[in-house]
Picture (cartoon, rainbow, N blue to C red):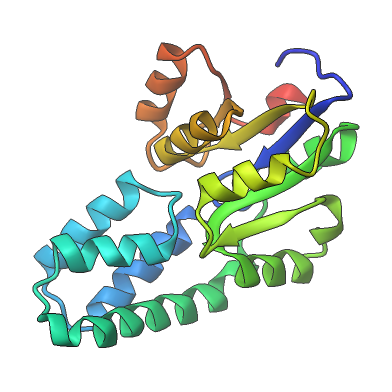
Length: 219
């Protein structure tokens, strides 16, 4: 990693970057859809999209499922959406706090002198609660999540810092790269826990972005 400057601001995605929680989210979505009675083939189609587009909010995922995959009458759309969301949120809330921290992340945040934040596709209230319970909330200046989009949160976050600040976004999903690019951040790929590690590595190489498997590599 290039030598940091005092004006560098580090912002992290959460799932797969701060917490080893990607599989928790995938399993929770599978169980949520199955609980609604959708057939296996339909559930798998939803999960394929979910994994490929990991990093966007659960609200956008469910909207996509309803618009493009699930055969739901319009009059039942709101009820089904709320049911999937409630099922997913309940399952995540039970497992999220038990997730381990990604390798080296706490040492990296502790040892560097730069200001650190989290911007995630996870529900913001849920995310703050989990980080508070795990005793690390104070290590981050801002913790932002959905329903506000990741791009909007990244753009709004920059307003809290000087104009000459250099913003880095550490992410593990292709959507993280796109959000960082749209918001004017330098993207830094984190591959070790990514659900699309090969594709993300290719994206980083093609766009001259730095990437790591573990934060231990840059301690």
